[in-house]
Length: 327
Image (cartoon, rainbow, N blue to C red; front, side):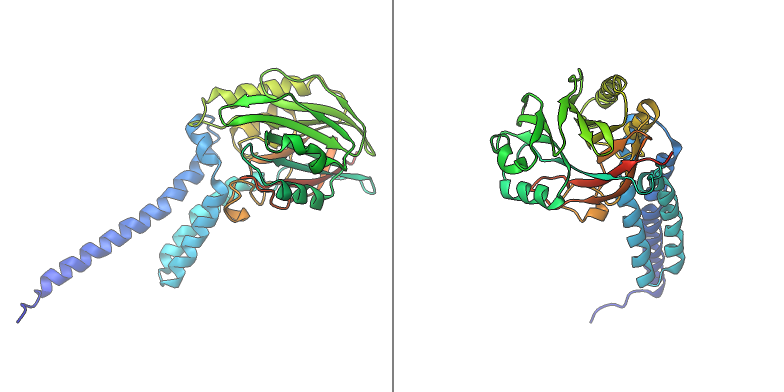
């Protein structure tokens, strides 16, 4: 016959278990709260910048936590989870709904397809189908690897004007950047210090300067100064241009984080809305982070922005329509 557990010991176990649950719940709510406060602080150091990249997935994770707590009848804790969710929404709002120029009524618009094809991507059929489905006027590609480069005619053969950067060697293979257009292109001088290719397109909006760019990865994957110095090199390139400018590519940063703020503040470019996210492509897009960006000078306005058809890359392509800004 087993000995019964003493009632006082049972009560002690129950109290200890309740404390552990409360501490775990407090930790689950404190984590997104701290993340939101760091993102809202505006700190420019590398640690805060890395955290600020993940405000969007953290928001949805926190909302999921609140919903789960409601299902298990932890209503007060669910209400508490809405506090960091609100803070995260405030932090991510400028990324999803950035300040932007208003489109000029009745003005023509051009469609831009921008994609990081990924150096290891060998799915040529997926690349071609994605580009074809977008039906863009201008195709801007980065990280065109050795598998894709010999097949540019198959990928962008319907776009008669093309400008490409020379092959750049990387540990994981050679890459190039390409701009293909239905409108005549004039090559722009290549910048020093950043992986980019530029062209001036004769569009229905008038001449538009196009830059396809790829910034390095952020700290801790690469040294912190790398992205900053490359953004400065991009700034020097843009400052030599006259007329509207559109810059698209993989910035390895959301528009509301440090590099995005540098692009807006120093170069004077405005981002397209950053929802849903573009990376990693393996996740549902609403859980991704929008590091593949399109920016434009204030004399251009974004009509809309969407994600393109998957192209075999670990990044999702971005498709935007751009027109003249209202005077």
